[in-house]
Length: 109
Image (cartoon, rainbow, N blue to C red; front, side):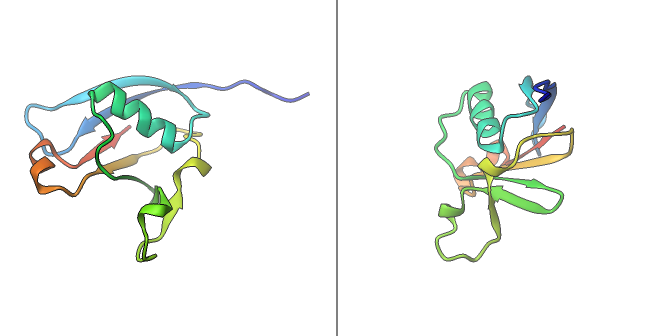
């Protein structure tokens, strides 16, 4: 018999380098992939997905490999990994200096 049970994770997403802290807490299924997590993050912060992004988990970078047009970075496909068990995730968005006053990374725990 196949076990279809899954769990919900409560995630706290906090922007780095901002005072006072800016954060959101969300509940998500442990089965969502990182692209789906990215979409949730966009929604809860009221963003419009105008900037590139990537996730770092255990020193491995995940994102959209098509954004690495010259193959300079080792970017793994973000749709191929689900949240699974709780872990520390760094979400990096935008390298645009005009956006840097909002911070350009978030800790997800």
